[in-house]
Image (cartoon, rainbow, N blue to C red):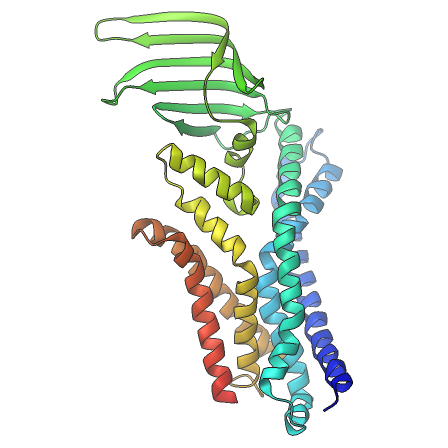
Amino acid sequence: MPDIMMNRLDRYISSAVLSSLAVVLAIVIGLDVLFAMLDQLEDVNDRFTMGALLEYLALTTPKRFYDFIPLSCLVGCLIGLGSLASGSELTVMRAAGISIGRIVLAVLKPIIALGIVTVLLGEYVVPVTETLADSRRAVKVSNGAITSGYGIWHRERDEYIHINAVLPDGSLKGVTRYKFDQDDSLISSSYAASGRYSDDKWLLSNVRETLFSEDRTQANSYDTQNWDVKLTPQRLSVIIVEPDELPISGLLSYSSYLREQGLESTTYMLAFWSKLFQPLSMIALVLVAISFIFGPLRSVTTGQRVISGVVVGVMFKFAQDLLAPVSTLYSIAPFWAALMPILICGLIGSWLLRRAG
């Protein structure tokens, strides 16, 4: 078949898959935004108005796109190729000598491009919009302070740190520090009303300090006090957001910092590899979808295809989430924990495609 005809065929298959994918993605994101709005309505007040809520939902939409794109690829591919199969178009293509491999390639071309866009979105757009959305919402809800539950806990060397709130400009409110010796005995505790970062160091204000010895305690007060710690505002911004909202570069940097402090970094490294392997996840799920169309779901209804896609997608996501604690418990390398579900899906899809061919 001439190349021009093959190119037209590739575009036709790609457009059928992409149009179905776009519809699925719009529906899933729309439902998620609706549920998020209903969940946030109880926080609406004089400061966090309905307009602010809509702004928050708009800013968090890129993250929703990033989260739901693998599932949408799976279901969209099932619906798009399924419609071609239902109209006997795939049968005609096969009768004309078009191999399954060529059809797979036609489907994967836009998916690979979409995977690259998704990686760039997760690296440069999602971290910015999520931080902006959380900060603006928190400022309005909590009257200027960004809080995380009951504050933020952090450990550096022999010091345990609790920060009540982080303001949008990176300054701190309510810094409590507990310092221990090598025998894990408390040697000092202090509380600072506020702190700001200047000239590569923290300057704490209104500090009350208590020193502990074997037979007595000593209380000190300082108007200002230098705080020697490697916790910069940039690293602090990493702590106050979830790992899956961070850029790949930020995850790698913070994981290295945690290892330097002798702390567990598995969660952040698992998020790093999961984000890096996001395009592979999309390709693996699409291979499963294509194999289903040429195999067990060749003659079923669209509804059955959608249900099958949702079930497979949820199982894939469940496997990814389950491997996070399992990798920590059994010391499985985060690289393999993130790659294992992708390899399993890819192998299943490839095996079913070989059987269909």
